[in-house]
Amino acid sequence: MSKIKLLNIVGARPQIIKASAISRAVRNNFSDHFTEIIVHTGQHYDKDMSDIFFDELEIHKPDYNLGVGSAKHGRQTSMMITGIEDVILKEQPDCVILYGDTNSTLAGALAASKLHFPVIHIEAGLRSFNKRMPEEINRIMSDHSSTLLFAPTNAAFKNLMNEGFRPENSPPYTIDNPKIYLTGDIMYDNALFFAELAERKKTSFLDQLKIERDNYILATIHRDINTDNAERLETILTTFRSLAEEYSITFVLPLHPRTTVSLKTNLGTLYNELNDCRFIRIIHPVSYLEMILLEKNSRMIITDSGGVQKESHFFRKPCIVLRKETEWVELVKNGTAVLADADPSKIKSEFIRLLKNLPDFDYPGFYGDGKTAEFILEEIRLMFEKV
Ligand code: UD1
Ligand code: UDP
Image (cartoon, rainbow, N blue to C red; front, side, top):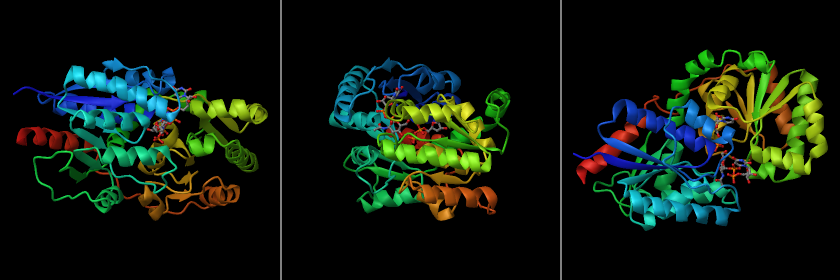
């Protein structure tokens, strides 16, 4: 029997990391069944936003890089659609795999579904119920163009049912008869796989940054609501500075390039002041192994990132979320993540509560058993076997 040809679409940093879980499972357990093509849209292109992950996570270099780069949503997405369409027509894959909710995800969904190639959406069903987020539009459109939808959490699975998806559908699955699954999260697979390796391979990284285990706060900011609004960004960063100084604790900020651009352009004086502050360590984006080392050893995490929120749970750290809402609602229900938006008094009060009086939190296994990639690949295999 010929192998099933998977065409993976990646573009943004977290998608490269997610694709590595699928690639690893193909290599280790399914090499007789699948071949993989990787298409990189080029949405992220700096070395520390892209190449570094291919090197470190041992995924083969992209078979195609569309080199789309940064642009406004419509222009960027349309260039991606054009490029992905050409690759699909040339490669004639059995299916197209999409990850998450970026413009690269949406472009893949539109290109593949219009050409009648089955779309497989990993991380389906997540909703913020805030359609001003570009990601919310991307998720909804991608889910409704998909044939197999893998929801990572109970909440995501329920969201799909509320939108009319039916778990009882039987094969053959098509875009009009899609199948939804409750799986775990492939990012949990990655966290388990790489956590110990990070400790081993990056032993001196904390020393290089001159920070000590359990004695620093890790913070990331990259959402458009926080970066493109100078007032919000200023509020968040000045709140960090005052907490760092008052409690003499270092804040480590591996800044996304979007945030650095905004900070330098709109808040140049603050940027210089932060760089001069002994408790603020602004650094370039770090590799995935470095990031999980920083997460594992931090005292607390403050972020607007989806991936980093979950990783705070994987590594049993409390998390303050710089947003009004989250798709990872189980974290907030559990009390281990709190929504603080960009409200300085809320950020401060939660910070103090979590720093001084860390409750004895429980970190339940919301995200599967670490073998989600294998589950997903087995279901894809069965789909093609049954056709
Ligand atoms: C994108 C995703 C977001 C995801 C994030 C992960 C969309 C709409 N957003 O947001 O869901 O959480 O990736 O990191 O798809 N830039 C560089 N170098 C790079 C990449 C970006 O300098 O390698 C700068 C450019 O100024 C660019 C800006 O970052 O305009 C934003 O990049 P873009 O890919 O459009 O969105 P992200 O904010 O990265
Ligand atoms: N990450 C990383 N280096 C960094 C910041 C984040 O490797 O400097 C990883 C992080 O550990 C997580 C993923 O990137 O696995 C999250 O990506 P990001 O925050 O860019 O996007 P989101 O998850 O919000 O879409």
